[in-house]
Amino acid sequence: MRRYTTAGRDSPAVMLGDVEDPRPAPGELGIDLRAASLNYRDLIVASRFADVVPLSDGAGIVSSIGSGVEGFAISDRVVIGFMPGWVEGEFTEAKKGSSLGGPGVDGVLAERIVVPASGVVRIPDSLPFEEAATFPCAGVTAWSALFERRPVQPGETVLLLGTGGVSIFALQLAKLAGARVIITSSSNEKLERARVLGADHVINYRARPGWEDDVLRLTGGRGVDLAVDVAGPGTLNQTLKATRFGGRISLMGVLTGFDGPIDTLAILEKRITLQGIYVGSVATLRALVAAGIKPQVDRVFAFEEAAAAFDALRGAGHFGKLVVKISC
Ligand SMILES: NC(=O)c1ccc[n+]([C@@H]2O[C@H](COP(=O)([O-])OP(=O)(O)OC[C@H]3O[C@@H](n4cnc5c(N)ncnc54)[C@H](OP(=O)(O)O)[C@@H]3O)[C@@H](O)[C@H]2O)c1
Image (cartoon, rainbow, N blue to C red; front, top):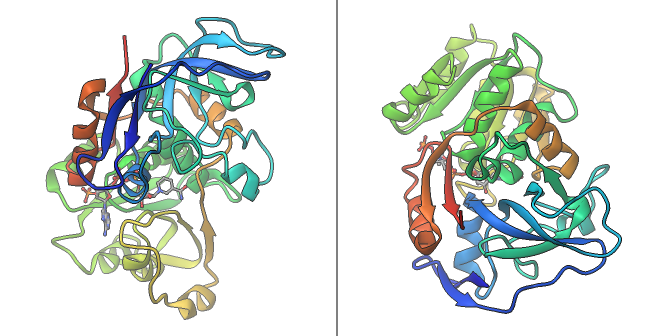
């Protein structure tokens, strides 16, 4: 089968090669991949590590079944969990270690993969593979950010940063939950697209570097109930300002780096709940598939164009998700 490996540099990020088909061990499924989607994490993996089969998010059809597997049949249409080892329950280091498409764990930018059957979710015939492949990381992360621990309530106000994969899923899910959404972007055109998806208020963070004051104005000086911060240390202090007393922040992003000075006083004085998010379980993926939302696929690349898909992700011109079609 053909599969890509990372080059350990920015561009071209991946190289195509041939290997023998993997065969499922007991308890595993062989899946012929039809589509895979890219996440910001894949840029980090590709530039830092060589010889990894990249991408965590894939959908396809069951093509072989290991002994002892029940509940799946050949040709079933499926999507694979970001961490097939995190089926449900509490998060652990071992479950994190099952994350696909990182050092030591082959990802889905390949024609075939074998994974534990317990890490796989069946999808309806009406859901195209190109859309299903956007759920495992960005979709599940957005779901976790909004609904884990203390779920967002109808009428609450949610702040979202940028219009990448996680934030656009969060926009769709927050609207489904009856929340009011404020979203930022560097692009007025993308903000218009966000409005079409239901965003109630939009702010261009490039034109308005003090965007947190705009958020306060839009909430009558109170601040938002829940903020989803995908950018990290470069935005967290502004997000803290934009969040109400007693509010909560779901932090999952590293778009501005991995560490930096944080206004810890604001966290405690405002009694803000700051929760770290690391994607989510296969059970959450199942709930997301059942929710029936239509993912925003910005562009689909052919399998042979996978390196260009990485370049497009780095260019950040996309709205929502970038997808690679692996075969028909
Ligand atoms: N911990 C987890 O579980 C988890 C899961 C998924 C993703 N993540 C992280 O979340 C972040 C987003 O991931 P993604 O896959 O959604 O990325 P993505 O699709 O590549 O999103 C990129 C977009 O983020 C926006 N952005 C960039 N810098 C920004 C800033 N300083 N302020 C506000 N928005 C900014 C831009 O939107 P505009 O073009 O609209 O300006 C950009 O187009 C990444 O850091 C990723 O590693 C974490």
